[in-house]
Length: 288
Image 1 (cartoon, rainbow, N blue to C red):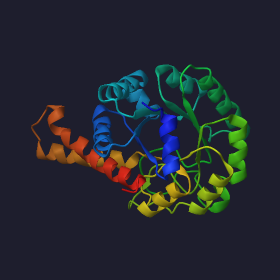
Image 2 (tube, one colour; image 1 turned 90 degrees about the vertical axis):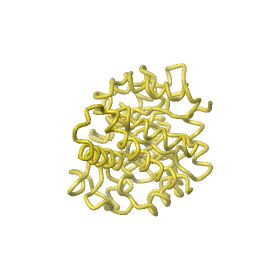
Image 3 (cartoon, rainbow, N blue to C red; image 1 turned 45 degrees about the vertical axis):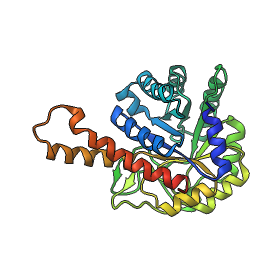
Image 4 (cartoon, helix red, strand yellow; image 1 turned 30 degrees about the vertical axis):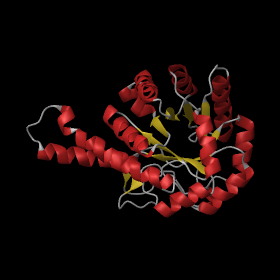
């Protein structure tokens, strides 16, 4: 089987993007896997710090590996938004295929220093591990929001600048970059987030030599996502929309089966709801 790095490279060459979807339980994983397998597309499973605390770091590795081995299928695992070097090292040692060090809450110099340390640790291992970093703050929570996350500014002067992106990559040696281009973590009530700055995405892509990742794509329009991919985004993250679909399905299922106590008999609809959202997103990311 090809590596995650190879699949991402091929996605960029084809002008499509690989879908990245977060989990914190087996039902969500099953829904994501069902959708990707139905369309025969590679997929990345993400677990951020809170999700890893709930599901277990090593347990997430075991779950994804079991599907990859049983079906010989390109399903990969990413340590999403990790805020410490120690956390990155833990995920690498546990067997994650890729890691994201998020140093956006610290100074630029500190972000560079710690990101570089994460890269060096990954390179010291005998297997291929992708290291991604963020440049520009887009919030930190995957939930439905009343307003833009505190500290997030989406006017052009606050977005990631091409020259800063180029310098950051050169100084850290990262494999992928997640820039701030008008995107936000979470999803605004009403379902539609502010427009992405497609022009800035293209400007960054022209001066860097690594793939870009679009975080916080829940709530972005289909047109914006497709244009972002055309202009250089090779991986697209979705989390909040999956969580919303899961919860709505669970509420409806419990309402329809008030006396049912077997989880697999009332959570089956949650798997189906996740599968529907993921299939829709994968079709968008791959222009199907």
